[in-house]
Length: 393
Image 1 (tube, rainbow, N blue to C red):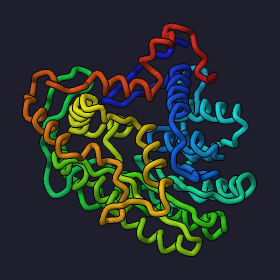
Image 2: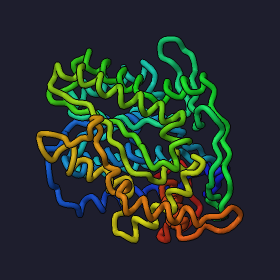
Image 3: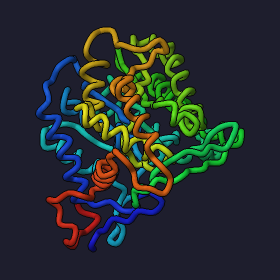
Image 4: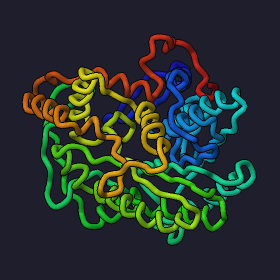
């Protein structure tokens, strides 16, 4: 079939297997050229949500820096003769093929990471193939969660709390500035978002693996978060997703108590705003990212997911015996983004935008290119008119 890009409300409905292979191989090639500074790096790594974005980057960085054996847990749509898989399905298979070429163990458990059954399957795989793990990365992004005990379904929402929110945004397809209006969340929606995107499942994973003695001495675990500038606070940090991230950060403190038994530690890494499958659908955020990208590229400070996680491993988690954190105990990988000169210039450009006009002094092309790339589109080396079997990579 001819696989074309199909986007509905900023969500890509298709992924290109050949393009996804180019994406993964480009990231691995970049990592191959980087100095292996820091360490010792983990040798046995579990990534919950390791098929796209920061999770995939974590898996690739661990492999390239420390030749780690890795296990990914993620929920993917498999391809059929007439429908493409999720980009995560293609990314995972390409990455694992590349790892196997180097003689490295790399395998995935596909299914609902929130479920007890997948936790048990993953634990059995760790016990059989790795013995224990040295690092657990929690990078799960999901719109819903089925409670493994009660069977109740919870759904996450991206909404402000307390009052409706109105702010400028940008239509990614047209490049025209528009006003986004988001209705406030109900109390129930806030609670459900915390259940889905908070720290409860992270804690369940650690407790489950700890009980089965699958956490090695000195094990580390890290989950990813975001804070961002004040302009996005109502829809993000002070909204429903922000409450979930606060719960994630609180959970890190509780996990440190659990992990003290094996000399381990838990961290939340606050990362930079980046184009991901999730961020593209958050109102206001595409405008901020387009402006941020332009400013950071002009100053030579722009990073994508792989570059961010490379810096996390080499300059934070595995540089010294003590991991540098802020007074809340968080790793701040957003330090470049939040520099006063960066934020001041983004704010200046934000104030230039007017509803109904084209984006001014932003990098919407970079936003679109990055979004296309994570779905396997936009690569000059790929013939998008070629007949492709979506089941093959």
